[in-house]
Length: 161
Image 1 (cartoon, rainbow, N blue to C red):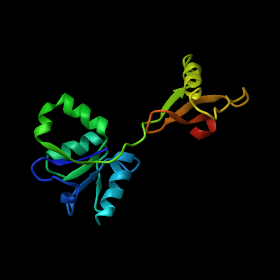
Image 2: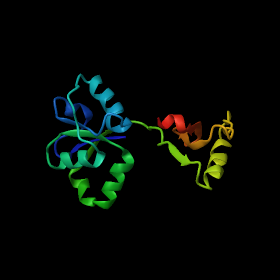
Image 3: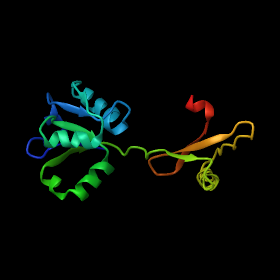
Image 4: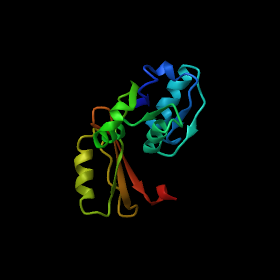
């Protein structure tokens, strides 16, 4: 997870003290959770929510906000697609590594059983597939920092209600 600001102003995270901060959305680990904790550590808690990592980058470029937390992969893709951003944005600090995003598999797809079997074979406490009385609508595969499967959650109809 990278904390970014305009290249000309911010060299270290503490330079953002008293600045306007953009959070992506409240449920974003990189765009809220980790950055909020970092801001609290230096005594800051002012923030606004702007809806997405890309919008937060745009707000830095437009000088509407001073800093934001951005998923490192999102920032890397933006820098690759828009090399001119390298002259305008500065990574003030990086926190992490953060866990990889969970994968969700629809069990109605023919490949889902194979995906489930492959993922669960890496997991020591492999969960059993539900019986036919409780159909599985998918599985959520949660990997850790190293990419190894840490938890597999079976998704059933009750989880959607």
